Length: 244
Image (cartoon, rainbow, N blue to C red; front, side):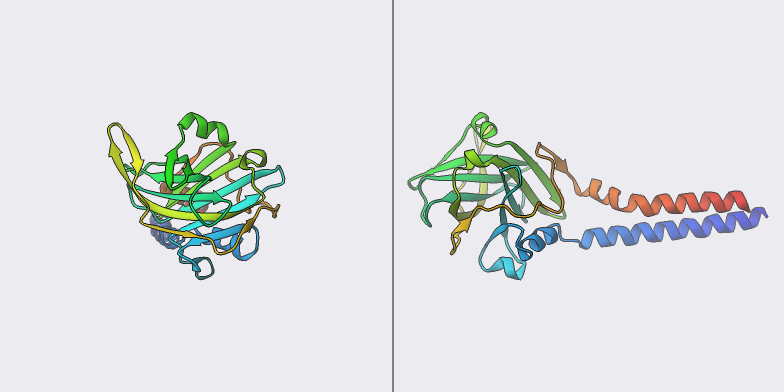
């Protein structure tokens, strides 16, 4: 009887590790942007990408989604495969030229910490906002990082967004140290959307990100996904061990 119990436990242990390895393999192969591209395909947001026409091809170096929710809050999503020390940005402009634009930025510092910043294009000069002014402008923000993809969510009341139609200016570049602070270098790549984006209410996002600062690591996401099968295996092995 004891030998039978030990054999069952050993078999279940091997099965448990096989499932864990397979779960991790599936997680590692997932593209965190798949859900964003699906929202674009389903018409649930205004979508712009860099370089165009990458949205249809699902190959954007920078993907931006703009949506107005039922509470009249503008949801801006910037998602990019950024390396440490890089930035991505969405400029909200009245035309396809730099000037008189509000710019929403997603930074990834040299330590891999993501953060949200804002600036304005005054003529051909970009002027950063203070963090105090940026925090006063937005209603909430969130950051996700998984499998090398950094995604920044920015929530702005429609009254502060102050545009019903606009041209999306997308850009990416590198950060550099200036004294004790970081600053943006001139963009490496940029584009202006060929079509005017119109702010209109769409169906809510399939997965809501809390409208407050959050940080989700790939490790925590992995744990959530394989916790369920792991619990089943442990429970099953315990039950069999008791019954034998």
